[in-house]
Amino acid sequence: MIGLQLVTSFISVAERLAVQRDTTQRQLNAERKKRPDGPRVESLNSRLSTTHEQKLVIDEMMRKIFTGLFVHRYRDVDPNIRMSCIRSLGVWILSYPTLFLQDLYLKYLGWTLNDKSAGVRKAAVLALQNIYEVEDNVPTLSLFTERFSNRMIELADDVDVSVAVCAIGLVKQLLRHQLIPDDDLGSLYDLLIDDPPEIRRAIGELVYDHLIEQKFNSSQSGSKGNESEVHLGRMLQILREFSTDPILSAYVIDDVWEYMKAMKDWKCIISMLLDENPLIELTDEDATNLARLLFASVKKAVGERIVPASDNRKQYFNKAQREMFENNRRDLTVAMMKNYPLLLRKFMVDKVKISSLVEIIVYMNLELYSLKRQEQNFRNTLLLIKDAFFKHGEKDALRSCVKAITFCSTESRGELQDFSRNKLKELEDELLDKLKSATKEVIDGEDEYSLLVNLKRLFELQLSRPASIEEIYGDCITILRSFRNLDDEVS
Image 1: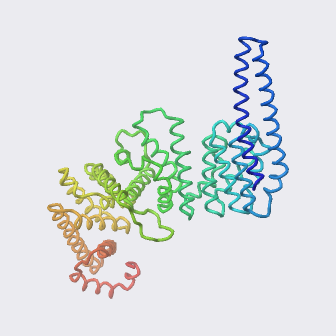
Image 2: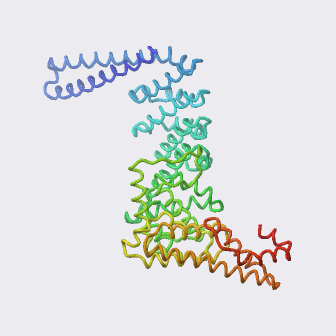
Image 3: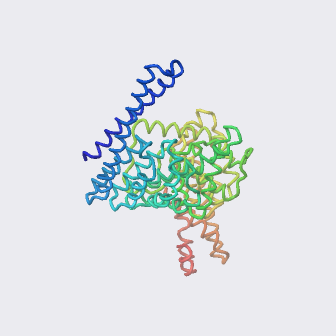
């Protein structure tokens, strides 16, 4: 609209006049010190007065255009006109705050946060983002913020995804300037597990910026080397809210991961799990969440998804991304080599932690064990994975163990591959021996638990490789015929 553009042009003129007025005032002050009553002083006074009057005229013309045009058109039936009005007002406030940065004009941005058009709401939010971005504007915005902050927070859950993402960015600015209290944000954190990934990522950035990074900066008391541990400690505080649901925990980790470098600090995470000179004392719940975080972060670092994709399309990566994933795989392997056996020993009997830790080897570069002369640590790791398989009977732990040892038998090379294949064969033979013994015990009238748990192990093993079960087939048939209620328990 021509009227809107006219105000924008007037602002350029007013800014030039303001610069000219300030320059003239400085010259006048300097001249008065030399000759208080000279002709030069009179000339500068006249110029200053003229410039000031011209600026007042321009300001008054802008006020009249605003009341005569904007006030009517910002409510126009055409959303495109409303959008143009709001965009222009945002530019005016940003360009000429001496006139427009006041509640008389700001309130129109606040009112249009409720506009029925998503485009108009988004224009208002973007305009406010630009205004709050200028530090000098913030003190003047306190009353406006108090009046409209609730609506800004509500827009984070707007029906239009693009509006919601922009609103989350605006709320993040309010938090940075400490204009809203934490108590107002409870509903926002629920969006960490929302469906649209754009909203989850925006909330993830807000969570990192406000709850992890900023609070660290505001209370930093240790050395720079403690930063990762402090950040991870704050992340664990958040994950406590989702401890009972590993799927929700994965969503939270996924949302924050790209902003939080500490999640890729493998040495720090491993050290925390092993309790090496802890800055933060971990509870058992924290250790479980940290093991889950390590496993999820490892997968993300090598390009794997940790939450379902909304479109289920296959991921494609460019050369630079593939090189980055390979570098991450190498860094992870170097950090894990000597510590992997220690982690597995420490958490061997914990079915939740062991299932996360065992599977990490699938995302490591096994060739580095030979290059770094760490073959013995590889062998120790594999032996511990085999032990874990026979210590647990739950699906997740068993499936992770089978996946890990199968990966080692196919992806390692040379002597390490021979060792892996031998251990996989030993695992299969030992399992069949346990099944034979368990079937005989049941036939002899003893307890069925050993049979049931070893059948579960066999089931998980056979999902990845065929196992020779002919030797126990006859005994299993005998049991099923003799104990008709057993088939329900097995299934």
